[in-house]
Length: 335
Image (cartoon, rainbow, N blue to C red; front, side, top):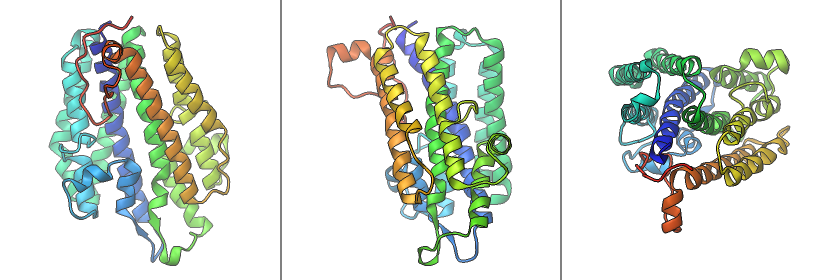
């Protein structure tokens, strides 16, 4: 398989996953706003930092208010991680290698892009339609995953799609868990337990994890248990450890996987070694940042080994692609 095809498959999956998870992140925020106690407010600038887009935002907007941030995250294509930009980039990547994918794949992704383009402005305009539009993005993306799982051979192409999906999913799960650190209370007061439970319940619901949490952990939603479940449970498909397990399985099916596999196992050890009970939001934010750094290292090793190997052999100091860029068309082959 040409490395440019492998890279396009990987990034197609990442862009699709990012569009869904950005919709989930925004839905989490919208629910938090409804559940905030009197006197508490939401730090919109912190949300940008959680998403890793604060510097990109400042290039285009002077004020970090709700309207600007929703426009930036949903429809502003100057932000390559906005929902509209991600669906467009996924569509463009898919168009270049349609013969590798099931016939219906192009139609599904094209329909998702057209839906996002037609409805993005409605989602920005107000909270009333926002939740419905973003749910449409989530459902459209999930139908694409179902199509891939049910009608595509689990060959090398499929492994690169799974790599992209799980890499992006693990990263966005940590960011959604980090949203609660953006809540500001008068005088820095600690939120009452009942309010904390409601807020963390919103996080679980946004990750489609509430029912499974109640089944496997308990009926009471406690911050430490939620974070521990979403980081380390090996059975639920949106947890960080489950995503790392999927990445490891994909690498096992690929040749020359020593360096990427080493990065995956380092991330695994850090996640499973965390003690999250009783952590303050600030310390939790730092822990989640460390996990995101480990995930970025996995991406770098994947890029060096499978997408840019020839490039690195000839120019070792060259930089790898970042998540905000369009995949390069490297012509070296995956060995």
